[in-house]
Length: 249
Ligand code: AMP
Image (cartoon, rainbow, N blue to C red; front, top):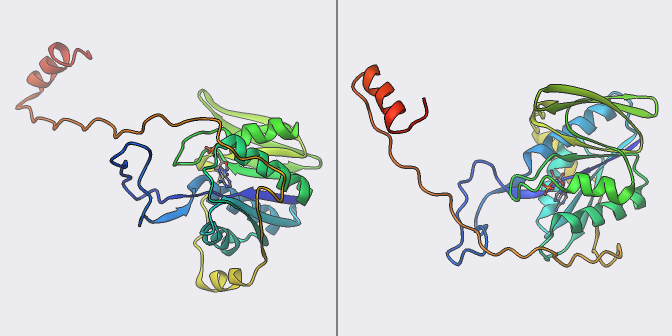
């Protein structure tokens, strides 16, 4: 079973993002970029499936600028066997990414695609679902446990009320939640090995996909600054303030 893992290059989760002064987006000049954390979990899970002998090959794929190669090298240092970059400088929205991933999935004849549940930059939570729809495959989103049983995947999902376990027929789309696993620490020898692994590059045109954006961003703004808190002298004052000022009790 070949597993495809889409990985997105995003602003590192430790960076405090700053909105551009013209409010057209977030400033990413000279900012540390990393693999989307949920995608790291996806690469780890695919690597574990390979180590268990369930997956035969793990292919990482990224869509975006040339520097996404670094993200793909990280995926290969975790355990992906090889990688593909769909290289474009164009702004990519989830539908365009899903169309590109459909083309790569078909080209690779993958039986399982494990994506992150969402990218921490656009918080869209759309690509996996759109890919499932485009391919006509079943989907299991927000996975916290994955077991491959014959031609099905048994997936435990994190839902509001607790955990839900479902079974989907392969080929399928799975998206990862935070508690699925803890990605391994990438070691120096594996970083060196990853440099020698195969990385192919395509363009959206090679795949016959039109990536023209469908959604126009009107404005991006900073969240309102939080007001400073106050110290109250005793519990009685706290209760009084909660009751009469904040009106929350
Ligand atoms: P989103 O729908 O943007 O929140 O992204 C959900 C998931 O889709 C991510 O966690 C990635 O696995 C995948 N994805 C989104 N954008 C890209 C991209 N440009 N390249 C590769 N994978 C992507």
